[in-house]
Every structure is written in C-alpha cells, then in structure tokens.
Length: 320
Image (tube, rainbow, N blue to C red; front, side, top):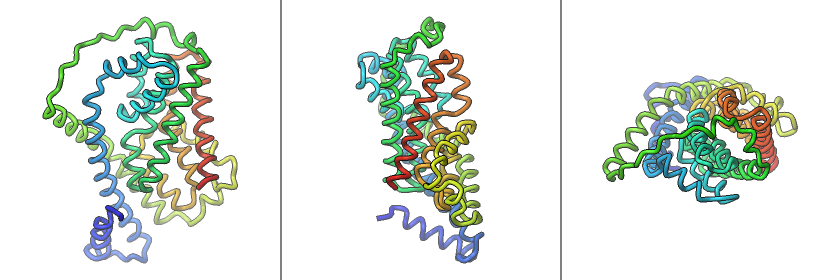
C-alpha cells in the first residue's frame, strides 16, 4: 500500500483541476512533480528527523566517547558507523566530534568509521531517498554506506597509521562537563526544536533541488543519460565520483536532482556513487582534514573511501 496515495490524489486534483493545467503538457507534469515531491519529502523529513533528534538527546559527545573507548577492533567500527547515523548530517560539522574521538584515544580506524558514516547515512538522505525511490532503495543506500564506513575504518585500523595524524591533535584536551539528566518533556521539546531548526535550514535547498529535478523530469530528452552514462559505459561511475567531489552540497539539494536524472536513464549505481562522493568526499571536508591529518594518511583515506564507493556503484549497476 502506498502511504502517499491520498497525497497523490490531492496533488493531481490541485494541479489538473484547481490550477487547470493539462496532464499532457510538460509544464503540467513538471508542476505536479514539484508539488507532490516537495510535500512528500517535507512530511518524511518531519517524522524521521523528529525521531532521530529525540534519540540524539541520549547521545551526548561524552557518552559516545565512553562507549567507543571501551570497544576494540571490528566491534568499535560497527558501533561508530551506527552512531554516525544519529549524529551531524554534514561532513564538516562531524569533524569536531571526530577530533574529540582522537583526542580521547579512540582507535583511529574507529574514528574514521564515524567520520564516513555521519554525513553519508544520515536521516536527511534516508528520508529523501525513501520519499523519492521507496523504502527498498533507502535501505540499500543505508546498508551500503554503513558497510563502507565499517570496512574502511577496519582497514585503516589494521594499517597502524596513527603516526600520520598531526601531533597537535593528541595534545588537545576538550573540557568535560557533567551531563545533566533530562526529563522526557525536555527531550521532546529539544527534539522538536532541533527538527524545526533543521527543516528551516534545509528546506530551501529541497525546493531548489526539487525545482531543478522537476525541470529535468519535464524537459530533459528521454534516454539522454543512458547514452552518456549508461551501464555499458564503464567509466561512468568514476567520472560521477570525480564530478561529485568538488561539489559542496547536502542530501537535500542533490537527491531530488539525482532522482530526476535516474528517471531519465542514469543507472542507480552511478547515481548512488555520485551522491556518496558529494556527501562523504566533499572538497571542504578534505581541506579541513588536511589540517588534522598528514598528507599520506589523507591520501590513503580518500583513496580507500573512493574505492569503496566505486565498488558500490558498479555492484548496483550490475545487480539492478
């Protein structure tokens, strides 16, 4: 059962009856696409962000550090990747917590599992993927991102690369404060306030992204991308990643555009690789990390993450 079927009926009535646009025109189809996707994404964002924000009220920075500091090897990577789902959705905002983990003596690979997962598999991306592609694709993306974060972190753990972290990072000491226990009412209020703040922050990007997506949906020639970046073009995935790295965008801006590109023929694996490169390998993140990591470690980190994303892109192009 499609939970959004009533919304689709309403938007069809609004577009084709009240506004009186024709279903047969490109303009009518594009406007219908824009209204429907904007409302659907907004509903999913409100619900999912509210739930995640409530869970976050139990995950203070100090509590996360205590949990991870007691874990070693693969278990630590698994926990760090999972925690990444519930923490900041921007790669640059995840870096301060990443530094805190290193300062606390948490294994380097574990901290990298967190750094990869935090921007890659966040509630914004999952809500929008669910809204635009369905829950199965959202789940595939979640599992793929989680596996990349966990496995890459585990590999980095085994390479013993701590000597390539800038020494100044280990000399830092973040002041620890005792966390006041919150009442349920305070947790609910805090989660609703954070939900409101996040929605207000990202919704303009959603409207822009959906607007561009609607234009592509209505006006781009059919099968254009199949010819340029189809499954038969084996260079499509790495090219998509290279295009994505310089872009600094969040899921709110890029996913609606990619959704329309997929409808026009862009293979799913190529699309996922592009989205992952935008969120996990953004140029601003690399610039910030350059001040924390020595060049050799930074190159190794970027290379391994890139290989993981390329593998994911090819895998889904083959399977789907």
